[in-house]
Structure formats: C-alpha cells, structure tokens
Image (cartoon, rainbow over all chains, first blue to last red; front, side, top):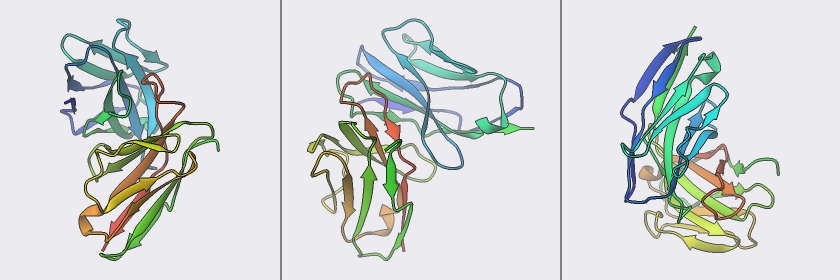
Length: 115
Length: 115
C-alpha cells in the first residue's frame, strides 16, 4: 500500500520569502505521479503542480517548483516570492500509473504567509 | 459545465436521516471520483466511476454508503441512517478519462454535519 507523509503540520513564511514544504511517500511502484494540491480558506482543491516519476527533471510552475528525489522517495514543494494569497493548506498526493483511482493524500501542511 | 459542481454546499441533518449529495462533473469527463475529507486531514478515496460503471467501491466505509451515476454524467452519493461519525467534507472530482496521466479536478465539496 502507498502512504504519503507530510511531517510539517504548520508552517509560516514572511511575504516575498521562500518556503519549502516536505513530503515523503512509500511505494513499491516504479511508475507513478506526484501532486501538490492547494486548499485555500474557500476549501477548494486546486492543483498546484504535478511530477511524473519517470521524468528526472523537476517540475516548475511559475513561483512553484518541486525537488523530486526518487531514490529517497521525497517530493518537496518550494514556493518562491511568497504572496498573501498562498496562505492555504497544501496536500501532497501520490497516484500509481497503473491505477488512477488509487490517489493517496498526505495529512496536509497549513501554510501562513505573513505580511 | 466549466467546473465540477457539488450540491448542497452545506447539509445539516439529524442522526438516522438519509442524505443525498450530488456531483455534476466537467462536461465530457469520463471518470468521476468521490472522496471524504475529515477536518485536518487529507481526502480519502471512497469510490469511482468510468462512464456509468462503478469501477471501485473499496473505499466506501460500510453498506450505508452507496453511489450511482446512471447516465454517465451526474453522480449521487447516498448515506443512509446517518451517524455523527459521517460528518465530513465530501468531495467529488472528475478527469478526462481513467488514464493515470490525467489530473483530477475537484469540486468545492459538500460539508455534512450530522447532529
């Protein structure tokens, strides 16, 4: 079974600074997808970034980038130039390539961006 | 529609009552998923459909929970004889098809409170 662990329940960062959210996972699968979702106070679930495990290059999406370490089963999210609107819960998620319904989420990290 | 629509947004019911939660996926999306999210936790998989066929219901906690998608579009999650432990946010998501490469787009959720 796959598990996803987010070891930081809460984090804070000053506006305009950089913050990194940690995520580790456990799987025996060789091919899979990793995701970061954002849940703002409105409680929407918004996809932030996606990484395909067979791609070595780290995904980037504007101010958001990941550090994907496949051997270490680590998938951290870096937010650069933090903005007040980045305040949200962030969930790391894992999905095997072979079975797209089996999407597992971590418990989340609550990020607060301070002015 | 443009996004995944869920109704009602909020539902308060008394213990023992039945509730029905509705999901209208993005037009043309083949796959539809139901998740449950307890406060302070990540979403947990309940069940999913491809077209009208329920492919996996292994996440449904017990036989009081059921789901249908009779015409391959709108889906209803029904909880019979509700209990207080059923209180949670119920999220629906859809994707273009069941390929693992396709991301899930989530609705805003239905928050259920059982008194």
